[in-house]
Length: 321
Image (cartoon, rainbow, N blue to C red):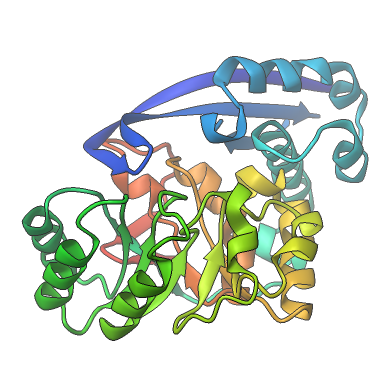
């Protein structure tokens, strides 16, 4: 028999995290512990209101399958018990962690992935005035970050981006609009980003407006985030997006994330690996995917005032493994 423990945590941020949907001052996560014969597997998720999730709803989902978890169900069975999302992610990752600990292996070894000694991760430039964003980008660059993810809403696009590019002329820039734009004016904005040598644009339109991207000629790759959750999403993304952003909180865990990565790659999509605001526990669970992706955006723990132990070792723009 296994024992199950589910609880919530709140981790204060050292700096407000501002995107098009609003500002956050703490990371609220749900932690799952599954213990078997003295070995404890741990998983973490970040419920996301954009997907209709809350701390309470996620914990209720997990508790609803408590008997099955304590009786020893497999990860494969879990995929049918819970839908993709944060709740399944925490459980799936706890089961992966338990299996790896029992086998005396790392997660990467479990899936046959060979990790590098370090991973370049995007560092996020949150929304502010053009000068604030340019200064933030310059400070990140001066401290070693080479890949910067710029958050934008629907205002001051050119002013912010021109200021940032002037501040960090050599940085690799990716832009995330978090669904804040609309099809009117999108072509001009894409051209502006291309002229500023932006490497990729992430989720410019609401997921419900993806049809506007069909047959839309654009000069830089567009990456699906809110529009891509699991392998089932891929059929509607072809011809609209060149890349997909894989997040374990969307796929419902590492099990589906690995399957999504394989299928998306087979269909010709470029891969990005992302995260929510989270602790090192959540990033640890995603590490087996890092060798597969073009861009890794794993800076969630770097926003925390204090990280969970054992904490991963981050430099500015680099995750050391």
